[in-house]
Image (cartoon, rainbow, N blue to C red; front, side, top):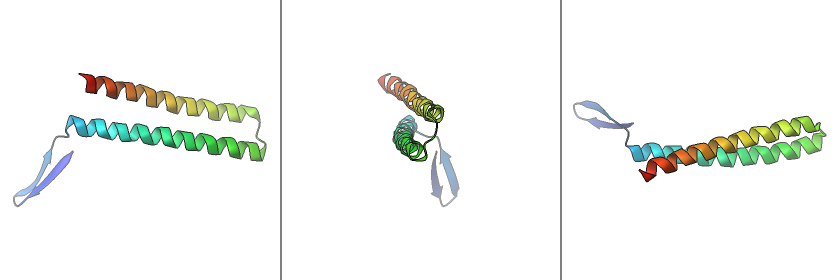
Length: 83
């Protein structure tokens, strides 16, 4: 939402569709980067601590869920921009 301040007060303007799309794109980029970093760090920490493979598998599933979410949202953004 865009906020403009004038001499008479504050005016709140509706958010432009491009702003929302750009914000969603930034969120997707952060999720992809964060998921990858956390997954790599988790793999390294798990190997150093000698954690059982079931925890590694759980970490892999969480990373896959993050990447799947990012793909779905990216597809939705692409579809909105196409119309």
